[in-house]
Amino acid sequence: MKKIIPAVLVFALVSALFTAAVSAATQVDQTNDDIQISISRAAVAPVIDGKLDEDSYQRIDIKPGDLNLNSNSLDLTTIAFDAYISYDDNNVYILLSGDERYHYCDHSPGSGDIWNQSCIQISLAANNTIAMGGDRLEIGLARNNDGEMCTYIWSQGYDSNGAVEFEFAEGQNFMIANDGGRLNYEVAVPWNTFVQGKPGVGDKFGFNFMYVWSADDIDVREKLEFSSGCDVSGKNADLFAQVTVTDNVLQAAPVVVEEPEPEPEPEELGAGGGDPADIPAPVVEAPPAAPAPVTADPISLIVLGAVISVAGAAIARKRK
Image (cartoon, rainbow, N blue to C red; front, side, top):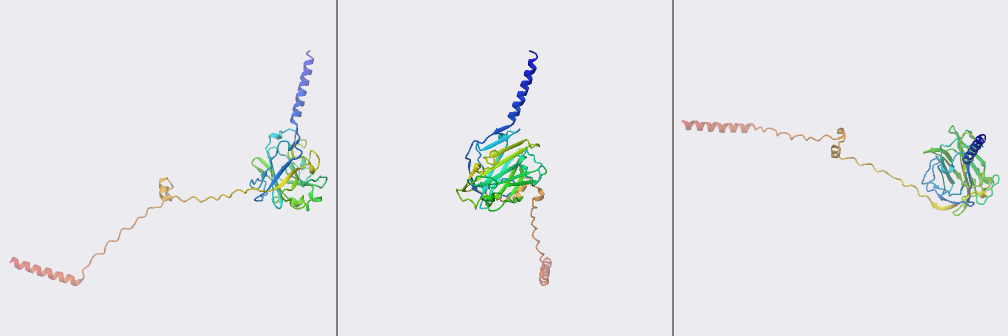
């Protein structure tokens, strides 16, 4: 009996380790086969700076079953993530925002292998297109550990639908930036790179994206995919989410103009204990000038003297 106990303990330990390893690797499959979302017109085109312009984007309502999750060590259901989209006459605007804590990328700019470390992939296609080869536009963005922007185009959509090639231009049609604990990937995709002319109201196009986190090992790749058709089910735009163009216009945020505060009255400064140096000195009025002395003219003095002399003589005679 004593010989059996160690074997049982070893078996239990191995089973526990195996269970832990299996539970650490999480696979959540998409269950919604026909994902439908809508897109609104931006009242003001967003600034492509990797920051969320809330009045230029609408948040994508991602429902349970819209995502494929493949995680080796992270619980992707608990990691902060949001996706935003909008459009105007020239572009489709997309911003993907996720927790920046799990980021690693040691690729160099121009590498087509950015997909196997922290990055995003965006795929766009005309409606009801089966994407084989160049039937879709598939682009990728990453920021390596040195802060360099890395981009790659795996498939140009113009081969069957778009009229021109997509070209990356940092600060003009894409940017990656840290924003409040999140790593944001923002891109503006011209309509004519994946469809023939801008879709009208009620028209649809295909859309798929992936947000990937990574450790310092390419075997540890945590990926989140919206709809299918890029990773799990191969390259097939017929499996992309369908986006309906609406005539809804996003409301631009009101411009708040702050009025300058009125200057305080002098008495308010004194009563409120303001800076004495700012209190104006009291105004002291000068006293009125003294009247000039009255000076008699010479003739008046002679007459006055004569009168006094006569009066004095009369008084003298009376006394005698």
